[in-house]
Amino acid sequence: MAPSNNRRPGFSRRAQYGVFASYVFAVAGMLVGVILLALSYFDPTTFGAARTAVAEVTAPVSSVLSYAGRTVGSVPDGVGSYFMVHEQNLALRRQIADDHAVTMRARAINYENRRLKALLGLRERISVPVVSARLVSSSPTSTRRFAVLNAGSWQNVERGQPVLGPDGLIGQIVESGPNTARVLLLTDPESSVPVRRTRDGLPALAVGRGDGLIDVRSVSNAAATFAPNDVFVTSGAGGVYPPNVPVARVLRHGRDIVLAEAVMRASTLDFALVQRAFLPAPPPPAATPVAVPKP
Image (cartoon, rainbow, N blue to C red):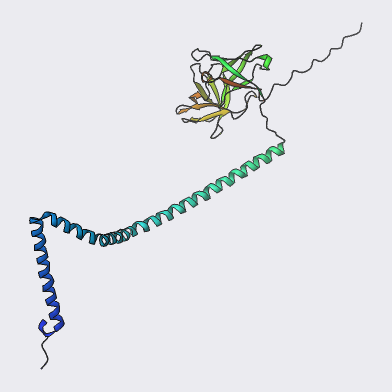
């Protein structure tokens, strides 16, 4: 006859020891719990000391388990950061490649420009400074805008010479005495300076308004649109002002004619630099001698 599958723990000595041990641990746990409960109620000081001792013993284990938990928890963040950094690295590499292409095109344009200038036999003209003089006074509130320099014809200051500040154009000499000169400021209604926009070379005229501001007027055939902070510099047209000297900065949006402010204000300066005209006027032709008929 086959043995029954429903065996009791008493059939195996190992099973009996396991059941007995579980009973012992359960009863011991209950006794410890009852003792700790009674101790916390009747003697809180002793219970606090025991609790502190248990915490001291279990603190290293808790630290190890906490560190392991943080390490495992940081794995997803580390993986995400790796892929993010990888994508940013690729984007930066693409940007560097684009910038390199732009730089190479700029170098090619610069080389072509220098080559064409050499072929045409052109040479750069640099205005020679005449004198550095003090701005004695200016008229910031009048409808006419002038300034006075403490240098004149004795210092080689002549009518028509441009006057510059450290950051841009101030005006033009209109009168020259022995030791003083009168400067027509950019904001005077009689002032008109050929300029161009720095970002695209749009030609324009900077005309004074007499109120401390400037009108920038487009001279191109197509309708021109101006944006705030557009900067205009001298174009060199007319031969008076050297090119690429800052003149005015646009204040607001506009078309064809827009309001701007001068880059340099004479009322805020102590000294100014007088330069020779960019392209000096040619000397007058020599008089042709007239033959006197003999009697």
